[in-house]
Length: 229
Image (tube, rainbow, N blue to C red):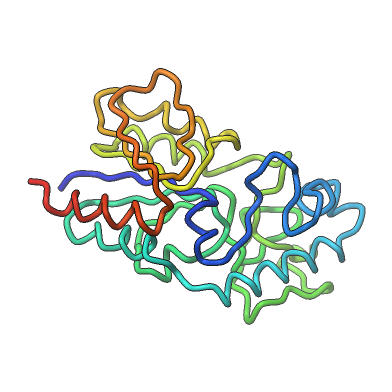
């Protein structure tokens, strides 16, 4: 069974109504990311940061997977599929994908403030101040902030090296280290990019560009891949 590796970014979630940090203005839902998405922000005003992610979690739980999410899940009927996502929502899982690597965490879980390896499911949409991990530290959103390590990047790079087919969906390749994952894909592997604004991939070989939004381009690509021998 051939291995397909898919790297997804903000563009696929945006079509489910989720606004994600993608553009160069440094704003996310009207907030400067430095005030809500850094360890310094948490140290300075933990209540503000907690409230921000509680509202983002509420938005995620209200959102629904779109046609692109469902199409990628359908690939598992014929291929061994791993989805690597930069997104912190759980829409891939809710659409039926069974092997999803979250580079930047997943907002539907909480984590310890002092040990990011300690994560917990969240009942409902809210983490309250005063809710503690087993080590006694305040629980926060299980999200990788700017300035923090991305622990899943090495496993993700290893998965990219195994790809027989690589698909890039809805990412501007502007956020590192995730943007560098395409460089781990073998040069002769076919690489499909689905995005209304195709990012520059430099000298990467065997690139096929589908200049569509995810909900249109991904189902079309999946139908093509499902009929390939």
